[in-house]
Length: 291
Length: 294
Image (cartoon, rainbow over all chains, first blue to last red; front, side, top):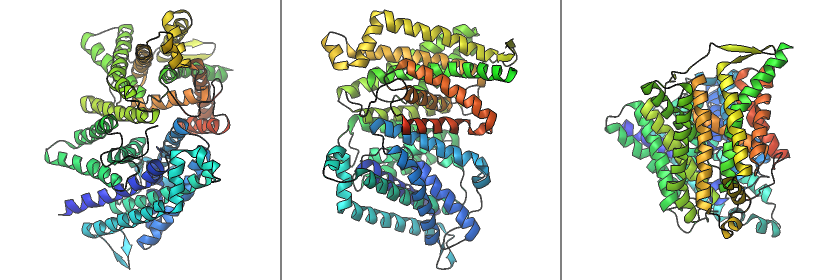
């Protein structure tokens, strides 16, 4: 039973990150490879805050998320004057840079050794030690972010984002400052990813740089591409497939190392297949055009 | 001063292997207009194949490099014919191709990991001992190999691009694919050949690096980063710009090791990329491609 809760928690956390990237990639057309980096900033911030101050989880999460959103400016400000391929490359470089910081800034992040002993969530004075409690919390956060995004994207703000995705020049000709909208989209996306990062840190109890590599960025991007960019259930579908399916491998008695490789092979292969046969994703509709 | 000479020697040696990566990556981008991320994993796979062959049949270093080049070429060709070409026919844009390339990268890298394990493998041609002294700088055997390879491969490529019919086709497709097709050049085969040549270069660079620092399934990633950075800094649309930028990056890295702890080497390269993207996004030799459109 505990195992099932564990899956639910991981599913929820990664679905939240997937939603955050979908806001950028699916709805605004900004294909970012830096999301694992934001996830990491949230995780490290949450970890350090929890270890030092042990505040209630919502305070912790909010603070970590704000830090991540602020950090996103460092990425978005330089990258947003670039378009398409260049933008992707810039985010790629930033992801590598962020990883380098996580790995080498020993004074703060303790580098490859990571930060151990992160306390579990504190809600209303009690520490949630059980996996069931963690599952409840993460699913709640997933719902909260889903609803938040839903409202955001059906608002005028969301309409502008969609317009930017379809034709940025045209949007500018309507008088919208597209750069400002994109910066806000980035900040919101980073905020949500930061929340997820804090959840991750406090659930696993240990953070190290290897959870926030370019492979993880590609993985998160795969989740939304496979699930369906810019759709409502797409990110969940993609996350479910990519998180749940490899767990089945566990029951096939495969060694841990081989399982990790097979899982990633599964991601890569599925991504290729989806681009080939269903470019709009499994749950996709007539979504953003493949440009 | 010996330090300056050493700095120059190191920069040239590192730049040589970076140049092979940057130039080959640029060759693919110019003909296909998308970022072929899987280039990194071609580099790695070719090296592993050569390792297997060299260990099994006790091949000389030269033969191993040739096998690596051939393996790379074959893999690149297969990638193009089985994946990219069908996607191009379906009118998949550069973004879709990039994503497919990412998928390919992850898939193959993990096949390598599964097959060979994650531990560092040592080729039978590992040499760390022999060094020679040139003008006060110590040049290791592995560095000499890289310089030799670049001195042969890169001018060779230049001659091909400049003086052969194939080279003209490649340049035509890079310049204006549609127009080239109209005058009778088979775009798809020319692109395949571009992949072939570029992947062969990657294979050569791969095995030389493997003989220097060993084989690891993730070795392709760092190579890819270097290739991409050299390409963007050197300028989109210019194969030789990428080569030049490769030497610049190598020098930057070597100088930075002098000043900063060496663990920040890679960060220096990425920061340089970001700065260039900020202030001179068209790079130094290329033209500004805002939106890749084919």
